[in-house]
Image (cartoon, rainbow, N blue to C red):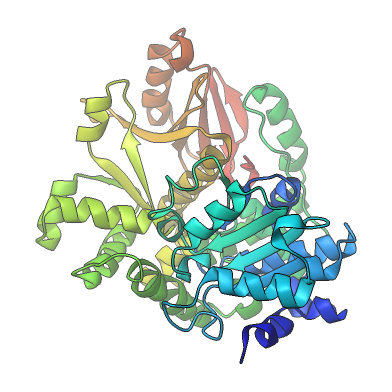
Length: 471
């Protein structure tokens, strides 16, 4: 099949055929609004996230928006995939070959003198050789083109591309659904009901946030509904495809095969020359079994009988592939941060349960899983707001689960997924607050304790149930 024939098939809107409803789904992720806000910015827009998280769906929803809402000429919207063997069969096939055919034979305009903007969507762009050099050239020549690209991980998108695209590209991360997002997907696909609106927490006005949350907290029917959905989320995690499958055995099998195994053996191995790929998979199981614990790189290296540099490198690959999260220990001493243990967790709790074959979640296991879920929620916040996320452990082995450095202040977060919280349980976080008052940009004004079902303010601590934690 030639390039033109392929493009005619993958862009049915050129012949006034509508986008298949199956590609649009019945609900949009929150990130759709982020894409729309940036759709006419000059910079290249990259949509980053793990496989099967919904990036391609977001592309189709964006194209539909351009056609239906912005009334863009259908032929000025191009979509193709870098993973399409009919377009990129071998190393000699170039990105410019596809674009030349599009502009000459479809749009019939010169790329250097376009009458109006053209929107070019390239899915899985990392499979195209030298893609970053082509995009840099097109961008620097100031062609009237908006490029929207996707990659299955930051490994793919930024290996050898950071320098060439610096200042020319901006990112939108599309990761597994948070609980708040999952809940409203559940309302759409399972309950067939309207959304549940939980107000976002305002860290600059916590007293007001608590009062707003109380309106939901004391609505017993709504509370029970949310808590039932949370129980399901703790087990299955945040990948949207769950709503098409629903059966837990089938779902966990798909997570293992499609997201975990292929995420390692395709996404990572296609980029890096790894001598022992099986160690990557074993490390993932190891982290799942010891989720949210702090480790020394040397200790993990000893466990797997490899050198420390290999362990550091492999953990970096897993983080960039959006499979794990790595937290440094909070300290004002950079050298100390580098030397101390790292806290490791599986990014998505559904993947953790799939790895460990957890079909039922007891209270003890739920507490560990919720801690990693809170970690994930704050990672998303930090990436969006350019904050930094740490954990805390001092020389006396006193620990705090999460420290958020907002650049103007610091927020300690402790997870106590229980309804029995004693003063001793919050001793360390209260001590941390006292030690960091009035310290300029490192000052701590309050702390947050994430609970099972306690909502209150006590001194400088705000106790918030996880099911109300919308950040």
